[in-house]
Length: 107
Image 1 (cartoon, rainbow, N blue to C red):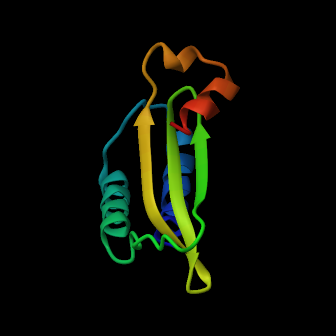
Image 2 (image 1 turned 90 degrees about the vertical axis):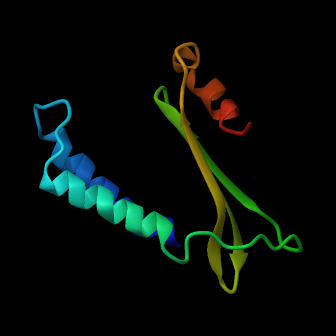
């Protein structure tokens, strides 16, 4: 799955920035990370075609900052991403309790 290749890139970037006292810094490392993410998210295989004869699997996650969801299916002995979505929470939503945030991610 393409998104599994993205996770290590994001985690490495998060660890490096967690040690930084700066709020935001765009240097050569950050630019390379961004370029790599663009490459991973825009190169094949990113999304598979839905097979409506098979069940769908939906994973969601939410926090005070945002929410995301991934829709995928078991195809050819592996899980393939059909679609994904994410968005930031608005000011009102960012104060919701965790269980409400999870429900919002299902919308």
